[in-house]
Length: 166
Image (tube, rainbow, N blue to C red; front, side, top):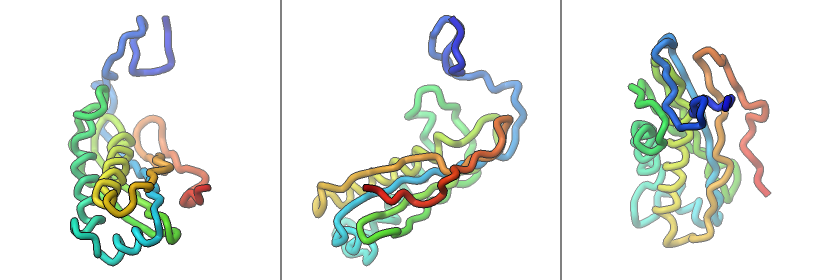
């Protein structure tokens, strides 16, 4: 049995990809997520008025820690010596928080999963800290925006705009 999926061997068994022959290069990945909520909830976050504290700073730290622990969460990811993890927040609409994470490394494999994990956990942290005032929040549009480095080259999502939602 042959498969184009690199995480399975010729017999269909799961495996960690052997990257020992790949060159170490600078690699970068940026991912994003959107948390949709009531406008009043977003105002509480922006004005730092929630009783639990500064939601965005806690979410930033959670995202950084999550990126560093990705190999512990995703079974076939390689543990990587990350060189940078940066999370940013924006308010594209009165009811949306946009989260982006950029992760860099000098390694034999990319950091897409680390960037995706960072925005996912940051979004979950926002939900956790705000659920007492808005249980209807949704986490949407978790996606890779850009990656660079390695043999597959550069990827940039054509639609770089923040998702408008429904």
